[in-house]
Image 1: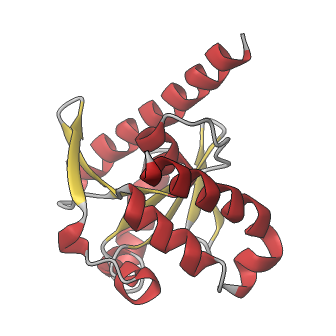
Image 2: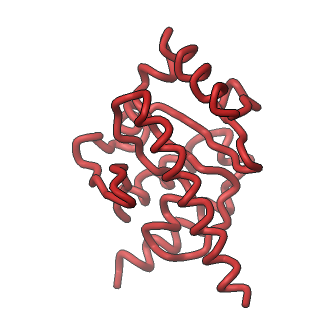
Length: 167
C-alpha cells in the first residue's frame, strides 16, 4: 500500500514537472534539467520523498534582467514566489525551485554538454546519470548550508548511488 502511495506521489510530482516545462517552453526556448531528489528518484525508481521540484535553467533567467520576465510569466500562471533567494515558487501545493544550470560545472565538474536529454510526453528535459548525481551529492557535502540542513539525506543518497553504480 505504501509503495503504491509513493509511486503515485512520484508520478504526481513528475507530471507537475512536465506541466511546468510545457508552460515554460510555450514562452522560453530552453531544455531544463530535472535536478535534486525528484530527478534522482525518476532515474533510480527509489522513493526519496522530495520536498520540491528542482529545475536547472539557463543562468540568463536567474541572474539577469530576464529574471523579472521569467518571474512575471510564472506569476501570470498563478505561481506564487515564496523564496526569492532560492527562486522558489508554489503552485497547487507543489514547490518549484529554479537555479542556474551553468553553475553545475563549477560546483560538481559537470559540463552541460555531457548531460543526457530525455523525452516524456513529447517534452524534452535533461537528467543527470548516476555518476553525475554522485558528483553533485559529494560536492553538496562541502556546502555549508547543506552540511547543516541536509547532510544525512545527502549521505543516504550517496550510499544509494554507489550501491546502484556497483550493480
